[in-house]
Image (cartoon, rainbow, N blue to C red; front, side, top):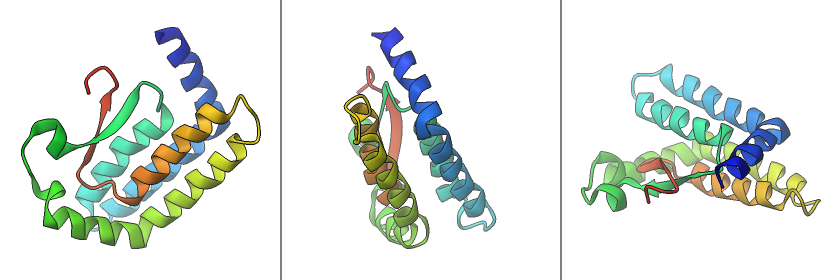
Length: 137
């Protein structure tokens, strides 16, 4: 199973994952410009790593993972997700949707398109989410 995950991750990286991972990291750098955006930037780098190598990883709500509500999973996280959506989320989601449509053209690309759709959903509301290996959750 691990060999297939490696093969899929390498193919993903070559066929669009590199571009979207860089997009996430660029959004993270832009968030780090202001002090207020640092938590957003940190989330961008974590999710950007997942955008580079998505197979074998998934995003989960931190409250579901730890059982404890924190700033990102409460009301402040909701407000942060609204701000995120307006400035960065919609653009990253459009990028992932465009890549997903390109992947769905071929049968071989369907698993890659599904990963892009997962990342598109994550890009809309990343605050309060974390990335874990599939085996952990």
